[in-house]
Image 1 (tube, rainbow, N blue to C red):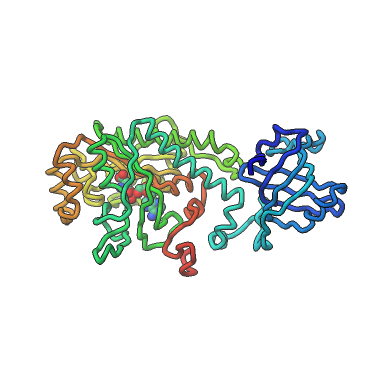
Image 2: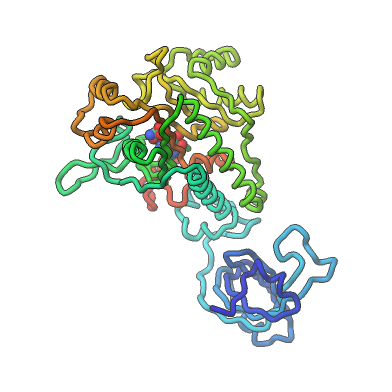
Length: 449
Ligand code: AMO
């Protein structure tokens, strides 16, 4: 449709006749006149069919919401008193000359409009294809697009090489039972939980690498922050002095993402009426034991000696840190070595604790990472202690046999980032087609929401 103008550009055509194409967003029939709001991928505009356009009025009467139309009209400036300063095209109106219906739409099962839309999440997901037309839902995914783009952008600025990690793998990177097994020509294989071992292999050749990949977690419980298929933003870097270099890279990545979202998605943030989390200059960084001690001091809840944080710990430490520093983020490091995967680097001074770290934002984990073991013999020793079969990680071990610098890395879940940026209550809102125990597009059961 070569002659078509985008709705966002109509302000440049005041006084001219234009062709637009899009959906009927709202229709208000006032008898002699019909008001129609049109929507295309760039925005919305109000149009009016005046009484003198008899043919257009006839077509206008047959329209319903979501009909797809091609419209010829004249772009008129609105009288001063009718101008709306804070919305796109608030200063103009389209005087409709003719209308062509490109596709009809069945009556809608629910109100899609900005003011009328209010579906429960389960119903929204059951009607995903139609709900995706709703502006607030689109805003969430536009922001997520920026999150992923800006991660990629920051990695490239910092000389990380992008690679494509495999999704079907012979062994599990993270250990544990949370893995989907597949039948690979009669042999056992798995859907990748994480590109962990591959990113370490690629790092051993390219120094710095990253990947944006789907990963799969057979999470056996249904929570508001777990999905079974996620977008994992992974990075790995060589020649670090300590895990603190990894923390700093992760922190700077977050700063870049926050800045890009603020700049590129200003209108979406306004529409969703949210405040982005605050990252202060140096993000507070506490060991697991310090976190547990702080929770004990402030809330009197004794979780000292626990091997990891749970959801309540993460919420509470974020509340404490927010009050004290205004930071919405906190790094936690120093987990019990045995509780984390075999590749995590044990601290030199206290080998029973490791140099693994998590970044928590507003009470929910955003990122995991840290320093890795780069010494071949030490890796082999850990593989033995962890009870793993070295044959299953042969390709990984081969990389480390031939000289690998001190190194580390991290991974974010894109849906977790989006969820916490926007203060969404359920991670499913941050995933266009969420997969969980109860849903693969179709609902598998009525439970768990
Ligand atoms: P981890 O398993 O902690 O670390 O995952 C990294 C990040 O991925 C996100 N995430 C999830 N998001 C939604 N649903 C899930 N089920 C889910 N599981 C994980 C979180 C989490 O912080 N190999 C390490 C990373 C590394 O050390 O580089 C790993 O996969 O945001």
